[in-house]
Length: 287
Image: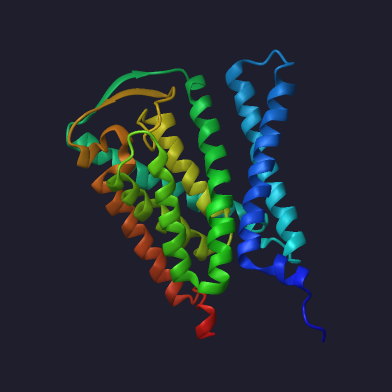
């Protein structure tokens, strides 16, 4: 058997596959978003609905770019975005996200810091719905589909979990009202949980669904600040006040002690299930 050429070694390198994959998916998202925006401007659709369709088109473009690029460069079937078992994975992710976010808000309510001001028309959820599913698909493709998955191939599940979680938390430092504490909370409650969710199902639909449900319920239903970003319209207009440890302050409920605790418990359960079901991948030097 002939030795791999320099070109083959370059394209099979984990570093190359990560960098090129990130560039391809970023480009697909931006190009699709801009093209969709120009086409939708020609319609008579309301601005919110134009943004909704723009988000759908950009999300489909990212998924397609990821699938075709990695099928080409890795010469394999891209099973992590296969439709096999998709309903079960989506349902599990949605339920987990709804339960954990609801528990987080429940603690704020029980502390007297959650006040309902008004119930708005259903159309008020269009903007947060668009943002939630676009962000969930884009970030999970990049963080779990590319960074975590490829790092895991060489360094194993545990190290990949730590690296991808730290990267995810660090990226949130750029958000408004972010602090080292809020980024640490995101690292623990989302970075680790989403990584273990991917290991458990070996597909991206579970973490995508969880990510979507968490963000949408937080901003689109409960009217809370999400990751320090400015509030959008929501089904419920609410006032959240009280200790930053319970409310998250200007960063939102993601920076709370209860969110971190609830998500950490879910992470530990998934870690246990992954261990007993032998789903972890060992680093290359232990194989």
